[in-house]
Length: 167
Image 1 (tube, rainbow, N blue to C red):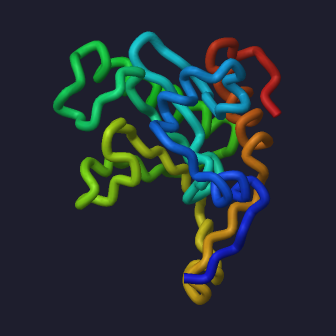
Image 2 (cartoon, rainbow, N blue to C red):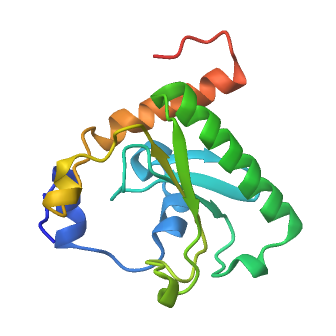
């Protein structure tokens, strides 16, 4: 596969780091820098630093657990509440027309992080596949992560206050 290197990938390429990036994000002093979109009582929403599409989010329990069957009822509820809010925010802020929603549990199922379960939420738009992935096996993400972060935060703000101005 051909790779297009984006500037925000350089830090990861030089030093991929150790430990769980979900847990590190939760411990970070600056949620914006950690790309945490929203935190509930039992779960949180974080942006994927290496997205499949603009606005690719992950919803994860706060508790460090590796599989969905380990979740308690409160975690299941909060994960789904945040998933629902994220979908609404992406529709408001980015005019998403559809979504791929999935869980890859275990390395055999394609999980890149096997010890902290998470739900992928990938927004989709009519015609969002162009010739690059089809002919060149390359994906292009056309917006800086922090710009997308701000858009999604505006969408959440609009959910909580429908009269708020959303870009």
